[in-house]
Length: 468
Image 1 (spheres, rainbow, N blue to C red):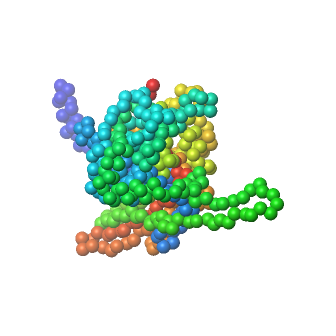
Image 2: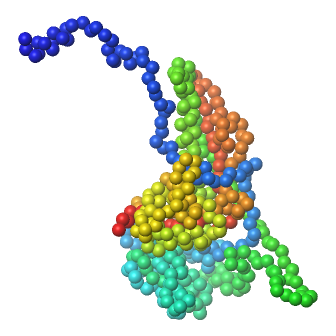
Image 3: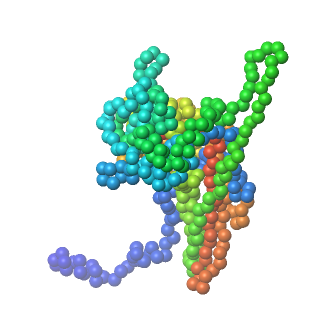
């Protein structure tokens, strides 16, 4: 008998035992609850102190400070030509509160584009300052003289920054530092002569500039706040100064934001397929996880209250060599007292680890919630994948002080809302449709507030793709 005939003979014999495919229909399998790859550690939500906001609005009262109108300037790029958006000139102190679109448009047209190679000197210390520089792209270092006569880096500027704005108002202004291009830079310059030419035939701009020149310099402390007059070290019956603490007349208010969705579950599924797991509970669990992920994303990136968009520009630093070095992290810590935590994308933490390896440094770690967290100078560095990474493989590292008592960053929520299953998170039954589908409204309310500007700092434009 051939092999083929033997196989056919075996197949023709009647089956004597239960097949595995049929047996699986009756077997009780061991199974997991539904899994979800989107779930992350969400350290920001876990470490941020949460403040109860009754009434849905949180007002941050601050001591009066004099804003100088500093901000970032936005540009439009067409091919190799760069133009400043006219309204963005209002970010410069000299044009603050000036809103004539036609005049700003003409000034924007008069801005001259210039290119600088890496290492090129843009302005020199002591020379006449007669134009303002708008940095469209690249990184610039401000170079000053150290205590022993050598050059020292005073700070770095990146895309959207400007320098030399005092030249537009003061004909006698000189450069108090040298600026040097670290990378290839594209800048737009607006000469004072062009501004004066436009002002000569524009009454509104001429009056605006005259009003600015007539305003005496405001007395402030080192933080731009209205001073409190005090006397110390006196003897005898000296006349003591009188003072008061002035407050901001229009303090900022934060309204609670909301993330919501409607979960739909068919009654047939809820009735017949609830063993061994409750289908409705599992659907709600995964929906709540997704809402929390979105909540943390909004706390980082929201344009109104997100941390990345609410950091003051004088609290934003640029890495000295592009990569996140220990020196940059020290500089970030030095800008504020009592820093409680860093937040960084996991790839940024990896890049920082490579810099530590180059220097032979081993960071200390602490245990939190069963995880080993690296630290720098005793401050934990928590991973946060909600911090964006640009196409150029750059990202940001956030450092902050937290808590109301510390005048830090706080999370905002409201507990005690109807049908609450977690603080400030509710699930409301909305009824059953004619198609026998149950609906649940899942809502979470939240926001974040920076109580004083130095509570939050950011190391921007951190390179994470350099391996040399």
